[in-house]
View 1 (tube, helix red, strand yellow):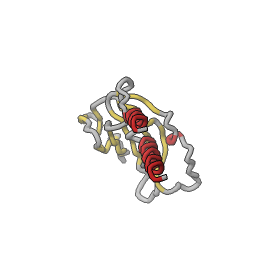
View 2: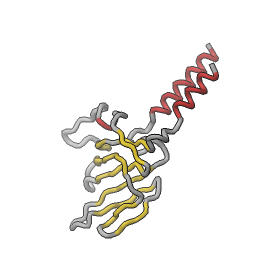
View 3: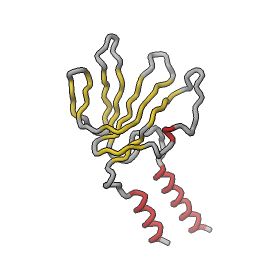
View 4: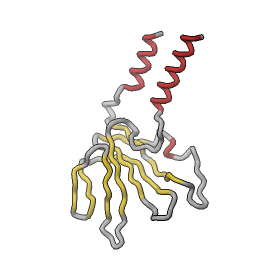
Length: 149
């Protein structure tokens, strides 16, 4: 029994080196419901099959909607470079787990927030609990229940 659990844990947490980093690829919104919008838990961002692979970074791009809005839209995708143009003509090197404000240089400027990560698969998703954590909690619960009952 112990070896089966150990094997399952290894399979869950093994890195997918062949494919590189697996990122969420979708568009969505977060915050309170905008007028007329209905939140659907079956959106494309809830679907783990919407993914891309990269050897650089996963990115989540947040589009602020204004001062008085209660929501913001975002786009999650792969980013295949180690450089970012933060303002026309200004390029910086990206650091993992860091966010940057990116301006289009317009008047008024449209500023988006780019957040980069590469520490785990699907690090750019919008969920708070990952599939791996759910499986781990389920396995631990089963072990505890088997021990006491």
